[in-house]
Image: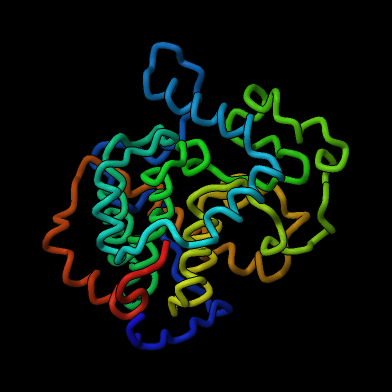
Length: 294
């Protein structure tokens, strides 16, 4: 990798300005209309979403996740720059998302620009918005979307009630009836910390590992957001607090602030990606330069 400017550490103990989601520019959708999951058999998007989660909840086990970690942590699948990876996502539509049906690169720039408008001085946060979903590139290298996209959750302990479709889609998952994995704490100790928890496999954990492997000098807050932004049962519903530490609880505010732009920036308003490229390329050169190993 080429030499990069070292990122200035962020003092996450300092308060950050929090934006009310209702303040975001949403010309085509109200805040309360996001993340609506149903069993509507007449809605093709809802059917697609539910089937993605059914397969995810059937197959995501401790053994499965550990196998995927081993496979994808070899970082021998591709050598791509960040922009190359973003352009590859032009052909990917997230099958788990009930809110939007556009290529993922559009969502990446929508989230990044929303963050940039609200937090103009946090360039690392802008870049986090741009790259947070890049782990979805796994779907272009052979992985089915049910182990790439969607909400994440811990494996190795009881599945929380707030998990999407919790009551109807876990039947058949072998960990559900495993005494070792089905208790409140499962294989974990109370307040062990999320860094010690095995999460369901998906783009969050993979992208976090890509950044660590390539020694990208993003601040820890960015890495944390990328690793846990899909962990809705925790940051959105308040489950799994029995596993968190003081550090997790402090970092939570960054994940929640990021979530406002990840979720509520989804719109039919498409940003001018070509015009935005020079700015974001400068951030890539600073924090994620050159060709990365995937």
